[in-house]
Length: 600
Image (cartoon, rainbow, N blue to C red; front, side, top):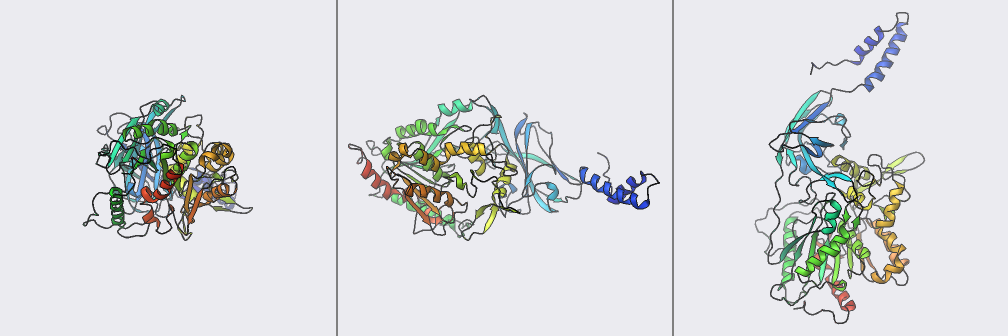
């Protein structure tokens, strides 16, 4: 590379002026020269900008790699940049690009042409000192049953968390000074690799199960597994004659069973502050609640039942949404016909619909309701807290059927950005565009492993390239009405129930429980209002008899406890609904059902 030369606008103009005929007036030559210089300077590439060259050595991988390269920059050196990656007001600059057949010692370049968030280009980055880090979220090739070949994250042992997934590569953070007006080449070498994750071991109360799914293996073209963490009752081994009701706790990927602790809180625990709940020593509160649950669990008069948290992480996300999907495969059927029977056989579940219940919050809330709707006789009740949008007319603040754009509301003379996140006072710290542009940096083709992309991966039809069809353009927000219509018929839970109530109603009556804070951070209460209108006002023969409640000024994820804040009630899912569950069993268990062996 030669010596860097900078031509000023004035010098450029003189060169142009000298090329004009001397017959042209001095005034006209000057005007035309400046005009041409302005045009040309705006169209030629700007070389006076930072460029990052990222590479890895043969010692990490002698073979070429595929994946998503992520460049991260922060001014905060209290933790690695990768742990600071998020959307919202506290977002740090990130930039992302795909790498295909990336060979060792072959630099990949991130420059001003690469899309970023919250700055769309490196040329927009303010000058200053930054701590920088690069990562490779590794992909591998899947040959799908549909005949398509797709490249997706190769590991989801950490719940599709690219920061922790085994085999992903990282550079060590380094401090650099960046000036976007100057030419810089900054080299980053990926030298670190995430280790394998050790599976949790069985304990007297928490057991684990993992099975290979025939249905999912056939869809993905490689061995695919489902797992679960099972909390077994007190006296499980001493009462081999007992068979138990099963509570399926839906939610995000669980590394192990959480919220259960057989020892008192650690007296030497260093307090940590919860930014989410604005509480000091929240880690101590969590330990105390987990220990309180253990004491309830072993008490003499506490009912005995199984609590199950399933592991269904996949190449797109930390869970599958527990339904069949054109892009993820038949996870709903695999869970219901392969995993649950295996759990009930191994851990002596009763194995009948009257003795199964499901609950969860947020993603888990949607999954609990969807499982009840799509498999109406397999469960005797669903408790859905702050569920992901259950009516796509309120897909957060987007009406997928009437809006033209997911990011903005349009008036005759202006447009306004749609909020994506608020607190209980209504203060907005992120827009829908923010959240989606953040995801677009982490991965294209619905591969970010984040929230909006998994909705798209689960609900959308498969595209001609084998990846999910976009519900809206990720850059502009323009909604695809054809894809929205597909969503409506297959995954809009309110629409499906209303459309099929004649068939579903008798199987769902008295089983649906919905809870949401009226200041949910993600505006999920709006869809619950629409669902409430149907369930309470427009169900006939039979009436739904649904239970629906709202928490006053409660944020995400209020789960129906009128006496305690979210910070406490979220730690009590596994016993909070028990009185209603026992009443339901008492009222609906068939004649001759086993309602006694588990009440020792």
